[in-house]
Structures are given as structure tokens and as C-alpha cells.
Amino acid sequence: MSSTSRRSGGKLGSDGRNTEVCRRTAGHRARKGVFITTSNFTRDAEEYVGRIESKIILIDGPTLARLMVDNLVGVSSVRSYDLLKADPDYFTEE
Image (cartoon, rainbow, N blue to C red; front, side, top):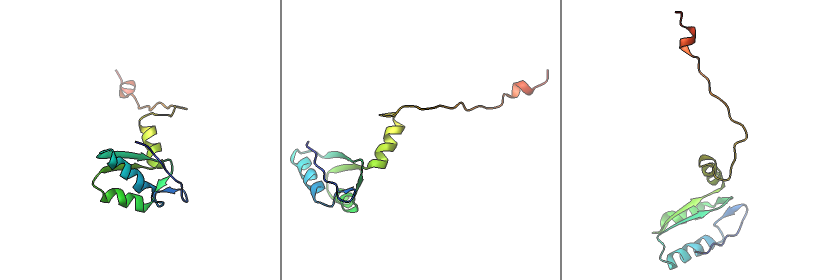
């Protein structure tokens, strides 16, 4: 599948290219697809994928960042912390 996109005011979808990519997906008889952007999708694009028969998932920039952190993809640990709790046995008199 090929991918094309055009930025329009920081959002993807209002220029009709989302429709073209979805048509190409259907042309390949694909019933599912995922479109990822580091930007945002327009409301029109989100509504469009809700109306069509194919199952298309839109992943915008904030969702992509969260998925990357949650799955440790493309990120590295800078600092870690120990979570401590009191040891009740230490305070027990014998």
C-alpha cells in the first residue's frame, strides 16, 4: 500500500487525500488499515473512517507518542526510581 499525505494547518484529512488513500486500500481488497501521523486528523477524516465499510484505524501524534512510551519503542530510560515501603519486621520487638 502506498501512503500520501498533505499537511493543512497541522491536520491531515481535509484535502481529500485521506479519501484517495482509503480508495487505494479498497482497490487492493484490503479490509483493514492503519494510518499514522505525527500530527492530527481532521474531524472530517475521523468521521469518514467511521462511515466506510473497511476497518481503518487513525493514530494521531499524541496517541503515537503514548503507544511508543507504553511499549518502549523508540524511547530510552533517563532515570528510574525505587519505590520503598516500611518493613514491619524491623520494628517488631523480640
